Image (cartoon, rainbow, N blue to C red):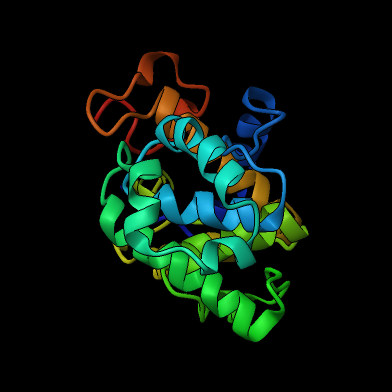
Length: 216
């Protein structure tokens, strides 16, 4: 099979984006939040955990610790009972207390609308920073989780396992104003259709433009 040109890949990316738009027109984060602080905490908690488990735990957590000032006064041991049902809860308890402490010390308790400042917070990598920046502040961003990475590779939009490199590859193919929608739609498609095991290629709305269809 001839090697796909950059122009052909861009055209295919456009068709994939159109297919995702038709299939998931209202794609958005499935994490429940009311403030940037709640989204930051929920996103840190969501690493290697389901949004369902995070959404089940955060209401009680946020009632007890509604803002960064309150959370910064807590110990990790005090936080653990609220998030015990979430994977890696001990490490995450330490991270969210440390992040809240840093918010109070450096940002008056507010989540900064600044990508580099978000990255400097404990427990925050590019994925979390992109989720917060895009959903709380409307900044375009592609948050690469396991679903986005898997679909990018199956669609042959990236050959990398490194999420940062996948992010760069997707940014080069898709218009900036659609980056946030793209990562939400790819997550939904990964959860509902393009599973890690046994993807449902026969009913996939992207199959016609997916080089891995029927072979994943």
